[in-house]
Image (cartoon, rainbow, N blue to C red):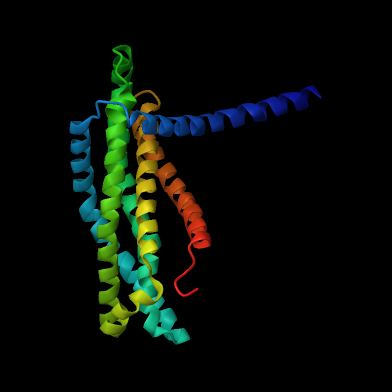
Length: 267
């Protein structure tokens, strides 16, 4: 009985240790939202982070969007030929790119480029005790450092998602027409048959949410690294992995809700 009690206590302790970071990260997200409305807003920091995030993400995202769009177009083109629905290749490709591929590509690029920079910067400040010094001086590190970084990532994500959608659709169009011998007019005309404006809005919403998650996870791991430079490096790696897992889970949830609430065109 005693052994069983110890076992139960040990399981509860392990569960508490695992749940604590989740609760702290969620609390950080709520604090970021709350402090967003505190004045003064750190406009200069926001502009600097916005420019940095955009500069390190635009080119990689565009380069990744081209093969993403091509693979989707080639796969769907082959499938539609098999079932005799070639005229819907364009619409199916656009739906897959705008709803799913574009927000995911945008989020992965932001998490891998800007998110790691945020985590490394905050982690270096933490191990040098700069974060503690700010708190001693009465300066909120969340309001001063994390809020502008978070909203810079959110806005860049929404803008970058539009660019990735255009590049992905263009890449799919080129590969469908040149490689698979598709008809340009049919590819473009099928857009309006299945796609609708809400598909673009849900893609933008996903990108904004993914950008927020990437910023919060990177900031949390940067504020809680293990001691030493190695701890900062480990925190950066962990932030990327955690962000990727959360992105796919949240994408599944948003897609499920969207398909339930918004009927397909013509349904």
